[in-house]
Image (cartoon, rainbow, N blue to C red; front, top):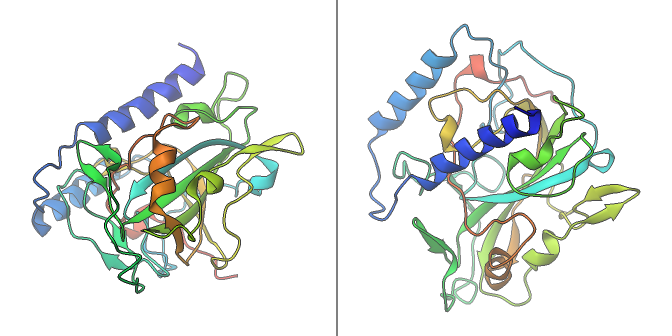
Length: 287
């Protein structure tokens, strides 16, 4: 099997884990369910050599995982390979520290929300369904965490993590530029289609419109995310850059993007439980 096919298969397993998690009832599981998932993650990774994982609490610099790797280059020296987003922030930190609850135990209705204040006008319900799925649609006031995924491989933007690999390089370096947004019913807010626009800059695929005014990004060594890894370790090494401040985005433009984009993304993905085991976390440098 070709290498890209292997990575694509892994990516499809991740996405199927998202798709099979039903959230129609919106009932929240108990703390015991989340604790059991974390215990299984610890058990399934113990002594197996897994590297540091993601997502994490950005307010904690501690981590004892010693299987570290070199930081990926700056995103301007890499190729954008994928853009997708999660309902609620997977990371905790900055302006997104309000826990959304345990959710369904499969990644939906959990994560972290924007802690700032929104006006009644910004929270006005939007007419029509935005990025609908079996788990519901997005609404004014919702928080999303957008992942702009970059690869050192010679690739083009496309669907899933598989777009980040090719047969020429079996182990490219990966970087995720991360921005958390809050959806508002305001035509004056940022345009998500512009934020997710991609083009070639100096011969490399880039997302040139990632906000530059949302604070200094917190960088750390981690992994891929998503609820498919709630009880299993992710084998992928990823350099994360997470901006601490939240930007307001026009909910209508998020809906338009979901109706058609180069990444075949039409809904918000679920979140992975926050990784709290120090043995699965890298230390964050306080430079």
